[in-house]
Length: 89
Image (cartoon, rainbow, N blue to C red; front, top):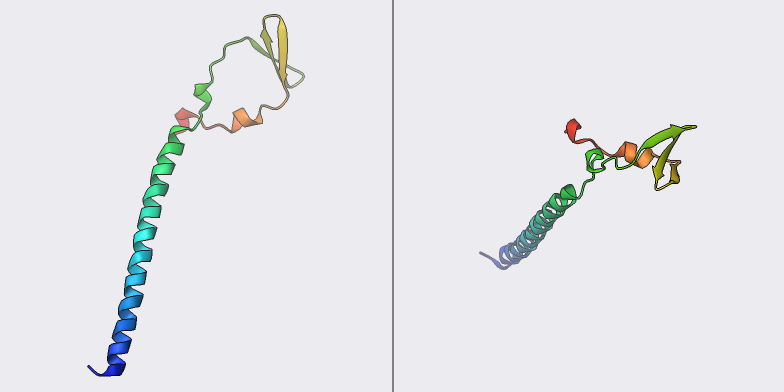
């Protein structure tokens, strides 16, 4: 092997090692993302997680809940409506 071929070979080896390191880093990063995804899936709230504890009525399009003589009006129920249902899965 002459000098030029030796230089090319060494350069290719260096590039190969750098690519191996990048691949290994990407693999571990992917593994960590998988663990985070599993943790997040355990934190998903479903509609069934919320029990109806109080009598609720709709008044003028808003949900009205009676608690100890006080009424609470939920003007925006859109976040609850966006929750997935366990039955859908």
